[in-house]
Structures are given as C-alpha cells and as structure tokens.
Length: 340
Image (tube, rainbow, N blue to C red; front, side, top):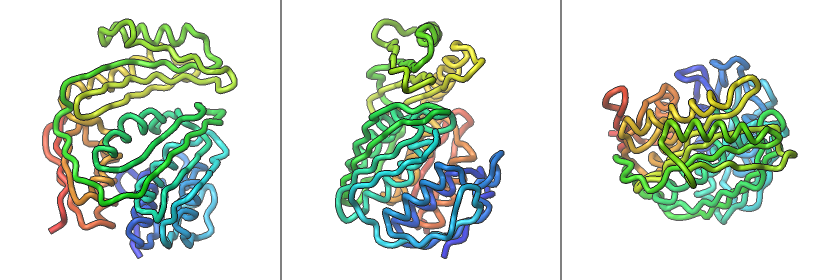
C-alpha cells in the first residue's frame, strides 16, 4: 500500500485527486493521512468526498468509512468499469474537480462511459467547465484520448445547481505529447457570463479587457444566462493558438468591482503571453498525469507552482517516471521521462 501525507508540499486537494486516479489505473491501494492539512478547513469538503465516492463506484473500491471533514482515507481499488454514472455534490463544490479525478481512469475502462456531475461549474480556485472543454480537452485529444465534455447548466457559488456531462471512450495507450511553443495565435476572445446580475457588469468587464488587450467586436462576448442560474458572474479569456488553447478565468464576488475581476483574468493572460510558454501553470497541472501515463512528454510553462511540484511527487509514487523542471522564473521546461 502506498502511504501519502496530505500535508506535504502544497497540501491541498490535488494530492487526493491524483492519488485516486492513479490508484484506480494502477490497481495500487493507497492510504492518505492529513488530507488537505494546509487549508483553512482541513479534511474532505463535499466535492472531495464525492470524488472519493465516485472513484470507489467506478472501480468497485473498498474504502474506509469516510465523511465530510475526514483527514484519513484508505482506498483499495478494484477493476475500472465503464457505464453510465451520475453524481451530485449537493453544494456549489466543483463538479470539474470530480471529473478531473475520473476522466483519466475511465480511459482504461472496459467499455465507454457517460458521467454526469451536478454542483458548481464556475468556482473560484477550480477550473471552469470551458477550461476542461477547450484547454484540457484539446491537449487530451492530441494524445489520442476521446473525451467529450458538455456543459448543460451553469452553476455558480454559492447556489450551485450546475450540470456537466462527460463521455469517455476507452482506447489504446496515450500518445506522448510535446508542447514547447503555443504557435501563432488563431483567435483570442473574452466572455462575461452573468446570471441575476446587472448587464452593466458584463459591459464593464469586457470594456476593461478591450482596453488592456486591444480587442474589439466579436472578441468581446457578453453571455446573459437565465436569472434562475444565479446570482453569478464569470469572466473567461480564451487564447486559441496553433498548438494549444488556454483559458483564464476570474469570478465576480460581492463588493468586488467588475473592473477588478477583469483585471485579474487579464493579468494571468498577459503573464502567460509574455512568458512565451506553451501552457499556463494550471494547464500544466492537468497535463502532468496523462503525460506520465503516456510514458513521458515535455512542455514549457509560464510558472512552476508548488502545486505542480507536489503533483509530480505524487505521480512518481505510482508510476515509474521522473520529472525535471528547469528554466527561469517566467518560463520553465518540464520534462517527463521513464525513471532510471
């Protein structure tokens, strides 16, 4: 049994999600202690508990008696089984993080799968649905994975109520991928999603983006959603380039001006552009596991976070791979190779 300390490194939920994915895929049982020890509220939140329960259902795992707040987990996986699954977080917890746990494993299932998760789809500190569709989904397709993600209903914090459905076709070994340059920009655009929020919020956000990025016309897209989805606001900046697609997000909050929300997304997008790297720190986190499953790969990244280094350490406990990060503060190269 692999033993992991959830307080190590970044000390958040990524340790749990990566461990569950790789435990399912490799068949290796895992025991995690001090889960999310470095968070203000340690232990399993609702979305983490649902990720554990969903993983257990997909592979028939034997799990310890876990509940919200638990800081220890024993997970003994069985065989990954495809099929139709539905999971409800029961709060605005991120549906995307539950999907992030399941999707790599379902590529190794015995038949196709359809997974529906209800909860939050646009949450602070979690990838929005469009990130998985456009950025992660495109990279996975380049590696040979057949994954389709459909956003059926937006769900914002604190109400939740969002619905996302993913279909996964099991397939052959993932192909190695190298992402060293983004390539020529094909299109860049910003979207402001609003629900039960004044339309002027979207206008102000997009005006801020227009000024900072030099964009106009079709590059600025207000997205009015039904009031029943809200209240909620998310600003997305999408950069679609020759070799990679990136999505940067910021989320509206009470008492935070629309201009400040937009400036956060613009800052992240411009930091990425200035670095010349192929991927951002968040897409890097998502690609490390599938690249390791493919036996190796390379990418340049705008920022190597503690999150990424912690993820690399966890992956290397399950798979015979080595990670090497080298470069400057504004652009680094990550190389994944078979372990010596």
